[in-house]
Image 1: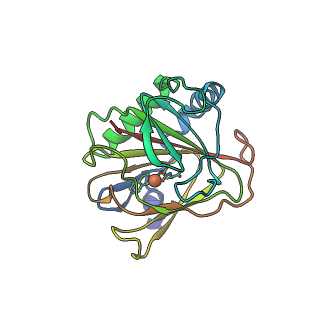
Image 2 (image 1 turned 60 degrees about the vertical axis):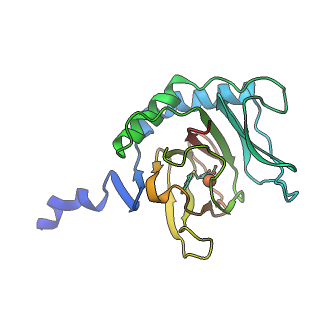
Image 3 (image 1 turned 90 degrees about the horizontal axis):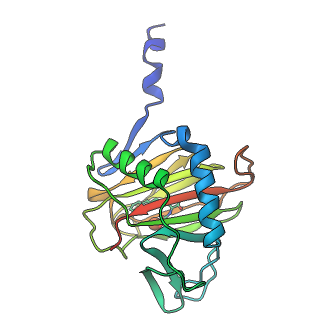
Length: 215
Ligand code: MD3
Ligand code: FE
């Protein structure tokens, strides 16, 4: 069958989700061990914690940060903070393997010279979710956001410019990288509750690294 010649095209490496949003499937798998080692080092210095939203809800996703700035939520609001409020110390420095991967992924998606100053580390266990929201705490919406999925799969919700717009469900797996910029930068998005699953490298857990130019 001629179709065999085109099987690759059924599984493209670079999958556009819409204007400004592209999935780089498995882009991070070559670095999986180095990435996970680095995640563990960051967590040792700045432990994962369940932040509280301004509305008073404890987030089901556990979070920490590395880089010059870290995303923080507490009853007073959301912000980027150069210090970890739990320790009073600076966030751990961004591991080289993180920064390199983020810059390279952004470049593949057409954003040259992306140098993130913030990396949010999200840890999902089965049942954890992230409700529909916009990322609006960064200074320059002209800069993209790069997200890296590690561990068990998740279904990502990619919505529109208004909360009411229908969202598309995007399955994200170990090693997938997504770059969001341009017209997609302020779109609503979220993550459905994770299903029970096991990954050989992470167990029943998903890490998502989100790289931003926040300051
Ligand atoms: C689409 N995290 O931390 S990153 C977040 O899987 C967050 O943990 C998700 O949303 C996670 O804020 C997904 C992907 C992402 C980040 C920013 C976006 C998608 C985006 C901005 C606009 C549109
Ligand atoms: Fe977000």
